Amino acid sequence: MGVLKHGRLSAAIGAAVFLLAMFAILGPLRPVELLQDDKSTQYCFGPVFRPRKIPVIPADSGPLSRLAARTVADTLAEALPDIQVELRGLQDSAPVPPPEPLAGVEPLLVACSDRPLFPKDHTPPQSVVAVRLDTLDRALSHHCRAWPFEANSGNGIYFHGVRLAGSGVLMRNRAVRQVARKLAGEFLKAWRVPPDTVCDLTEELQAFAAPENRFGELGGQLLLAGSDPTRSCFEIRRYPLTGTPEETGEQLTALLQRNGFEPVERRNRPRHHMAASYEIDFEGGDRLQARLHLPDRSRPRSEKGSFSVPLDCALLYLSEISSAGPSPEAVTRFRKLKPHSFLRAGGFNGLTGRTLAEEFDRVAADPQYSIAELFTLYYTTRGAGQLPVCGERRSRLLTRIADRLAEDRQSAAFMNHMSSLRNEVGLEKSCTPEQEAQLGRLRPLLVKLDGPELARTGTAELEVPLEQGAFLLWISPFLSAWPAQMLTVQNRPAPDGKPRCRFEGWSPDESSGASCSYSRHLEADGRGRSISIGPRQSLSEGELYFEGSIDAEAGKFRLKIRYKPYLQGD
Image (cartoon, rainbow, N blue to C red; front, side, top):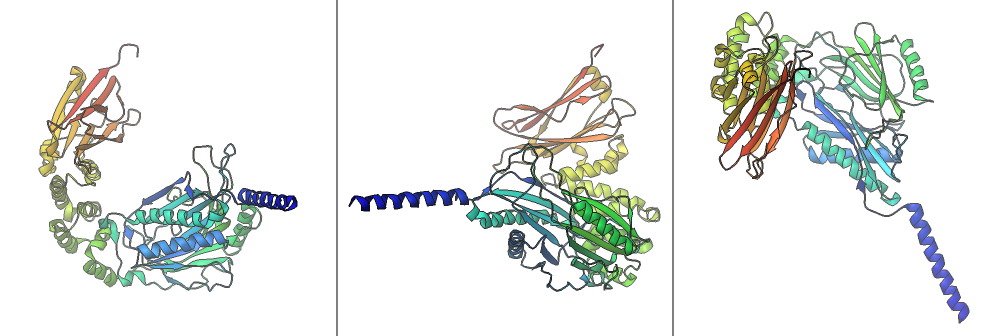
């Protein structure tokens, strides 16, 4: 009996030891936890072309990257049922993608690592995974003289994001899926741009045939191949690292030189185009360009939450600038079939004479065109050959835009549009009766103060009814060579209905004389508190302060402007 009890006790102890060992090996079976993340970078440049197809490509053939890419593709396919989302593999036996029209194609690269790089003085969490998502078709910046629009045929969206999650080993796949879904959601937000910035091309401007093997025998894995109106041939190739990134770069540089390319100085490009990488630019004559992306394995700077996920491969972008533009018939068809897209793409740059006059008048008088589109009309009709036709038209257009803004004081875009209008009317330099007249129905919202008089008295106070919605404060220059001081205030109530004011100011920078901008928000809290608006303005002989408060009961916004001269010896 004693032997039996002892045996049962030994078995129980052994089972407990086994479970503890497995627990230690596998890590705590805790739920997935999203840890610190590298903030995603996203911005638009030029009009945004609506995507037709989104190829999702894993950066390597490892199981984590494939799982992350599949999760991103599934998430996008569910959210974008009208767009073809295509998951592409990296197996050597995978078929080479055929050349295709690339206008409206948005390739994405997805990488996943369980060994992200942290700063040297940082102890990384145990058992983490990091997923990285990048747009790809943004590598080469070139000008195609044959393309008659301001916008190129790239989609106009740049996105880079990395997210980190911690979990137990058994929960790793769940962590990958959760982080990949989060990144896909952030990418979808990047596409939620204002509708009046989105362009659709006609079929004639999409379908350009690409020749094969235009760039020579360069090997690697072909991820994307095709053409669009600005590039008669475009490719993205992937190369596994052979040795260090530097050694891989030397080998690929030699390969490109054997095929007629030579290294050149770095071109201008969108900032942060491919994070955690360094780049080499190449040219092959006047029309061939290449850019090689190599992973940067240096550790990130020691900042809170900093880490990076370098790719385990090199990427090569190849492009041939198109020499033949679309036919005049195709451009005319684009203008007639899709007039909004034609305007957003900068199509008015190429209009002259009677066509310019008729199209200008048609757009300016049509209330279906947004304020943003009217600004595009203004910006794309200032060519030397166009001003004789539309110089007076453009002046009247600014007043029409101001009238529309007066009716649009509650919109989220009001402040940005006011900034554009301020620049075009020239209020940073002066505010003459003629300039005030250009403000149209915005004119009653203009409040003017005399800068030298304010410097003499030291203070000024304003009260503006909240129901007015907005006002523009203009303070004449304190010095003749300086820009004016300006502050725009908009009352855009919070979701709970409480008054919520946004301030956006422009002030001169003493060292350069240029204008600097700043913005703040103030929400009514029942206490009538005041806040400082913007930075303290340091002028040549004193300092300027703005202080704002909301009196919700009285329905007033109050603004105090103070000028404090420097004491002798300051």
